[in-house]
Image 1 (cartoon, rainbow, N blue to C red):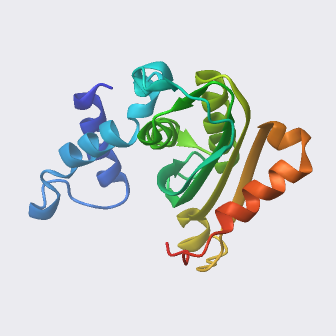
Image 2: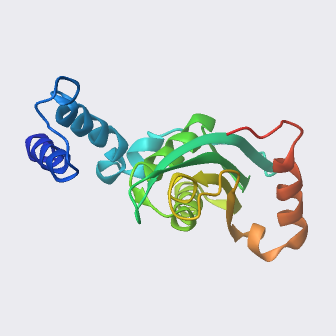
Image 3: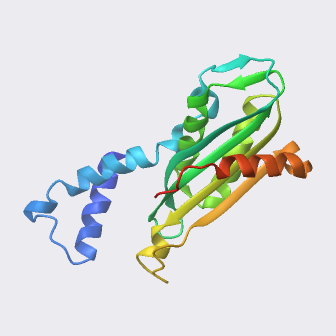
Length: 191
């Protein structure tokens, strides 16, 4: 990302919305926004293989493995406003497992791009499937979208839920049901 170009664009945006970029509170805003965008959109330059960093381990466990309530923060591609919530990931290993922190890293990698929740959910599921030879993968996301909360229909308590199920999670209703029951858990959902 060309930081200088982004700073100039943000300065122009401030002028277009009727602000004075020379006002004390806005003097460093273009620089701060450019730095924030470099962080928020770092997923474009990231590689899933590098994110996993070799944290794939041999295992005899061929049961369901779940990481629940992974915080997700992304930017909606339609209005460039944030959406945020929880991601639940499950898979059934054959001979390999992936380091648990790498599940969150893969989710963040795809979340740090302009996104729609539906695509983000599917990208996370495919990345896990492609990283390890697993029997099946399930990903469920529950998010709130500021583009729906602070503009448009202004619905403050709406939550969008998406799922992507691959392999045995797609083919076998019992596997899918077990996953859904396990991610329902006992902890309260707070956003």
